[in-house]
Image (cartoon, rainbow, N blue to C red; front, side, top):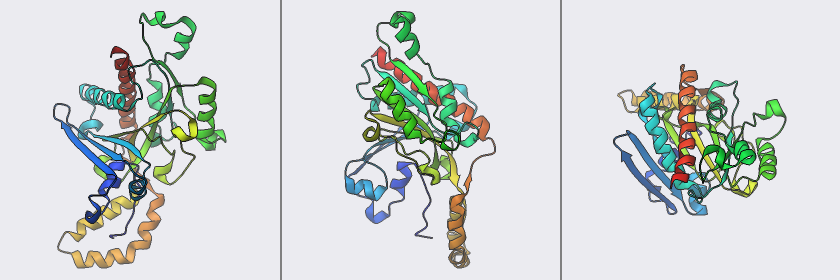
Length: 307
């Protein structure tokens, strides 16, 4: 059981999975603070060296994780508070946040698969301005400074026959945005973080990596512009659920029997890596959290201009 591995897109969980002996891993810095009023715990993991990146299995960069236990609840006021927290953290990662810029927001995922529709649904609620500003100027919005926001929903390869990276790169070359914001559903290691966590990173993203369906990465190196990725874990590896249950047994009186059972079931656990689980109310949850993400982006791009 000690060597059991499950997939996760969260840098926080990758950091937690490092053994106690490596807890002071060089090249990894962690900052944590709690926003009591919003009931949001923010953890910032900064990977500074190649060795640390290899140990963590994540690229060099900054990973901000917002844990909001009540994010699955239908509380509009609370979701507004989360959006405001997200906006602030996003502003901290955006290059030259107070300067006018052209921003392309990309909603990754399959709209027809509910747990994978976070990106497309978030794009639906964005405040799109590029076409108006190009046609009529900023006077159309009665303001002197304004970001030009455009959006793209590239779909999935099974429907388009093209890599997401190919589509995005073509749009980037044609429209020349200053920065990309990419939204995608993630996979978590812990059930308690399912639909309750937002990760923001300046390292870009590899679509489909959380479920083992690796596609070409969307990064500054591959696209030529800074890429900020925002994700919420909406699925958890089925093997995680089994593994957590076995670990619970190990802590109880039947420890010896649990160890024997785990040894016999190792192969079966590995087979479960092709199965992913989500909550039964995922349709309602995705609708709420996708709006929370889009509102956070709208607020960030608006606040940036307010100084």
